[in-house]
Amino acid sequence: MKLVKTIDEVRECVEKWRQAGYSVGLVPTMGYLHEGHASLIRRASSENDKVVVSIFVNPMQFGPNEDLDCYPRDLERDQEVCKTCGAALIFNPSPEELYPSGFCTFVDMTGPTDRLCGSSRPTHFRGVCTVVNKLLNVTQPDRAYFGQKDAQQLAVIRRMTADLNIPVSIVGCPIVREPDGLALSSRNKYLNPGERKAALCLSNGLNSGQKLLEKGERDPAVVQAEIHSIISQEPLARIDYVELVDSATIQPVAVIDHAILCAVAVYIGKTRLIDNFIWENI
Ligand code: AMP
Image 1 (tube, protein in one colour):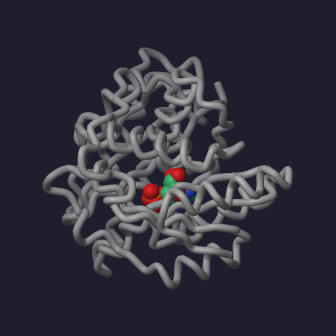
Image 2 (cartoon, rainbow, N blue to C red):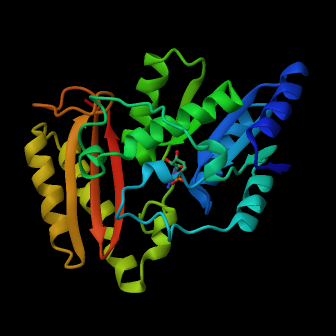
């Protein structure tokens, strides 16, 4: 496995693979890899001859008062994870490599980016779409892998690649959780022991919502209120949103009669965590 820092080195490597007839998978990440990322890399390795993992804490997708400067990093450990999971190449560019001076082109979207994380993080998806577009152009993979953990991001990337005719298959992968239900996230590192316990209110709230759906409830407002009330019982939690939306368009639904995304974002202390489930059992 190789680690490279420049676009030219990635292109050279991928070009050689293409000449040899290899298929290529891409797993975009911000590093500090955990079992959720590892599951994406393993899946990519099982479906492609060569896998590129990008590790880049993308400044463009962070707002002015967010955690860009303290976002956790551990490149040495990340390399071990990538190697063990079968990656062939890590692309770890500097911000200047992807955004050289004079950079002024952005990929913007309306619709699927308007609500949920898009309303509390107004410039977030512009940063995500722009960097993912660049990473797809640099690596030109057959398939790119994204976690259902960031369900809105997955819907946005699917829409962007369709709208811009980018020749890649987008593969969504299931959420990996801790044994007690907390969705794995690099940001879980910020939680102190009390907050770690409190963070369970996200998955507990979602589980209660899911149970209502299993019992036949089809009014989104009722399911939303149930999840809201469970999470609100946790004193360390401050709810950003609890929403039930169409899983592809990320627009509100009046009644649950097709696949919906039920998503939450909650501050536990200063740490903003997200979690969700998809309901397809109509
Ligand atoms: P990040 O490094 O947070 O940008 O995440 C990189 C990719 O890993 C994204 O596609 C995420 O959705 C995915 N991912 C992060 N956490 C998980 C998880 N717990 N389970 C599955 N995929 C995940």
